[in-house]
Amino acid sequence: MTMPATRCFEDVRVGEALPALEFPATLTALVTYAGATWDFHRYHYDPDFVVESGMKAPFMDGQMAGALIARLLMQWGGPDAFLRRLSFRLRGMVFAGETIILRGAVSGTAIEEGRGLVLCTFDIVKADGTEVLREAQAALELPRRTA
Image (cartoon, rainbow, N blue to C red; front, side, top):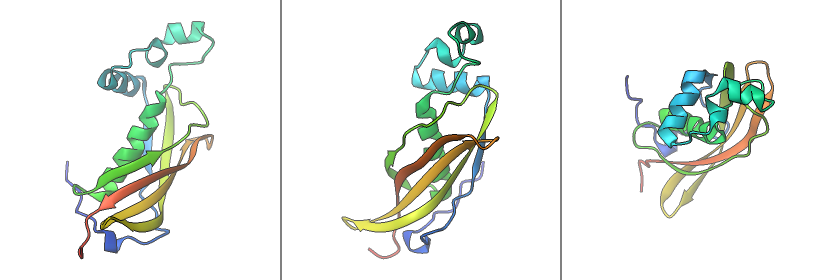
């Protein structure tokens, strides 16, 4: 894996789109995330249990959406980026076998205590266009060329 170049605060422009991230929510991905976060609720990995409970398939843990947003931000910002804030509210469920698309853009910039913060908003939709999350907010600190 090639590390991205360090992005500097001064190079970011309001309105700049972040690269979209397409993520297939496979059962393997859901189980892997559940194991990594010690969330072993059967809703995330047991198809029979989930169907008996009235759902169509195991579903993605809501915090996985935040992890994917963080992944996108850190890949875009580079190795010297630091995620300072993230807030979101899910609007729909993601089931095993569905693909989601994360889209983000720079909505503003700010200097706080000498730190260069890039403010971003994000949406997540399923491949069929169904909304999963909208208007998530994040603040990513990027290094500054001038202090």
